[in-house]
Length: 364
Length: 273
Image 1 (cartoon, rainbow over the protein chains, first blue to last red):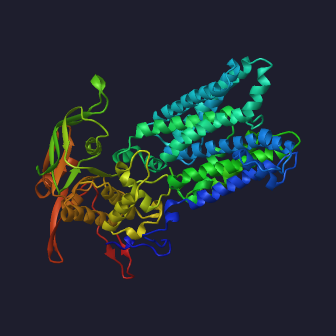
Image 2: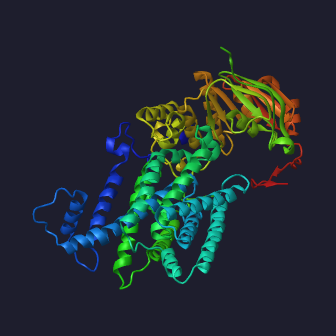
């Protein structure tokens, strides 16, 4: 056999034919990230104008999770309980779920579109969902009506992007996809503008603030509103995560391996649209997280989507939670988290672009 | 049990549907691939080689005619880039997609099958390497292993030696012959190199154009007149002895290239006109 087929000892990693269970299942990093997320959630509960020690926050969360094990003399005051239960916990959960949704959606989109340069806001789904959201606000729909409208419009926007990119000869191509996303995003942003134009003076400030992206006004209802799509879409996407590896090859290749490419792609488009609809409905447009976070996940766990999807979801939640903590603590007035995510996300993606260019990121 | 792996009867194909279809790519094509043989499809660009592979893979349907396939097909596409730097083992594992449920992950059995395919191709030591860091020849062998992991009985290869250097071209041809002769796999490939077909193919199909094809044993079909007609350029079949065996190969003449003037050696060792 040819010499070139002999492995180069400098670059080859030692191989064990029987890897340990933990290595094989790849759960070490997701477990670590999960632990970090729980810790970050508890720490976020302590943050704010009303000081709260970490231990007390943890005790209150324990009590809220298992209300029937109430200690005889609870070590917390009623004020502290209210601060956690009514104000901070819904907000922390909202930021966490939104981050999970964006991380999952970004990783699934990048895998499905074979392109590490796409994110929910770049393929038009966020703008579509935003249009659905403002339309729902205009006609006075709330809760699941709003999610439904955001979902329908997000799905429509993604279908437009994909349809446009298919018009290019030779199937879906990176550049065509990004350009199609820009066109579709701009179109739906214009539709959002029309809604703002026709909205009355009472509705307009709410719409404008909502569009900037924020977790302000978190409550149980909003948490439920995003939790349902995250659990529903998230669990199905997690089951499909190995298929994403196969789908990330070419259409012909994936088809020849027995994958129904068209069906699987539409299923993933629908699941991603639902995730983004939930996120947009509760917190407006929070850009860049869905694009940046999967890259961080791949740096931590490698390119296999079996590991990328859980890691990306957890990193997304950590990122979103961190941004929200900054948003509500650095200034007297809250900064909309959508502004912060762009402020932090764009330099991050620029650094990643610089570091990974030419190393298998995109050589088309 | 029949001795053929694939049979095409009166297959006609054009892109587009209905009356507005494009020009015929294939017309009235009859062909039969015998089990366990290496079968090569030759023809200039645009004569339907790739279309024929797509028909075999059932990614397009014939306009008319029948295609019967006995056995599972494993596909080896042309050398390609991956969007994400998967490891070699991950790549080969993807060959198990048909055996893994839509909502499932590959099992230990699937991993064992992937390892077995890697070992069969002699590249188990590459398992942990990123696919995109391999040489073209190594990548092609990994895709061979992936096709084996599908438990295919028929390998369909799309120009497997294109974009490879000479040495790796030889390695791929060697593996094609080995997989067919030693393990009874049917190997079907398209190629732009008639000398590769002469070296490894049992049977050859020449695609001159819609409705014009010749199929037969490589030694007979790959004649100078046939190939000159096929490619529109002259080729010569030459035979010589090499290490005790007779080697036959095909050489293009390149008659259009002007003859070079003889050069003379100067006293200082340099060449002059």
